[in-house]
Length: 169
Image (cartoon, rainbow, N blue to C red):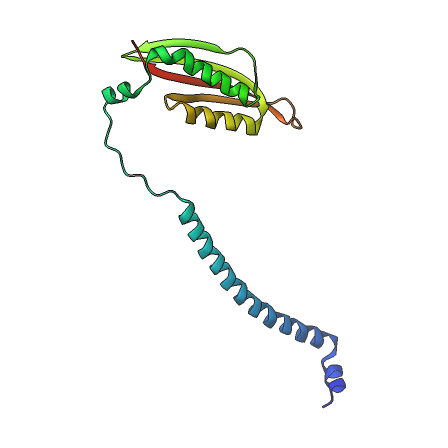
C-alpha cells in the first residue's frame, strides 16, 4: 500500500489520531527527562538550604536572673544609649517627629520606654531596626506600627516602641 493510499484510508480523523499518538510519545519522553531534572534541582536546593542554615548554636547554660541583671548596662549610660538610638535614625535619614520617654524601675532593672515616630522608606525603617538592635544588646523593639499615607507612596510612617533595659542604681 502506498503512502497516499494509507493516508486516504485513514482520513483526517485517523491522521489526527496518529499525530496525537506521536505527540503523546514525545511528551512521555520529555516528561521523564523533566522529572529527572526536577529531582536534580530539588536535591541541589536542599544542599543550598543546608549550607545557608547556620550551624546549630551550642545550648548555653541557663542564666540566672542575677547574671542577667549584672550583664545589663548601668543606668548612668541611659542618656548616651538613647542619644545613640536617636543619632542612628538621623544617620539613616529617617525623619522623626518628637519622641516620648517613660522611665520605670522594678526589682533592680530599669526600663526606658521610647516611642519614636519616623518617616522613611520601608527599607530605611528595616535597616534602622536591624542596626539599632545590633548596636545595643539591651535594647528591645516592643511594638511597631506601619502605615502608608497612600498606596502609591514610597514612604511609610512608622511608630516604633523601644525599651532600653539597664541596671537600676
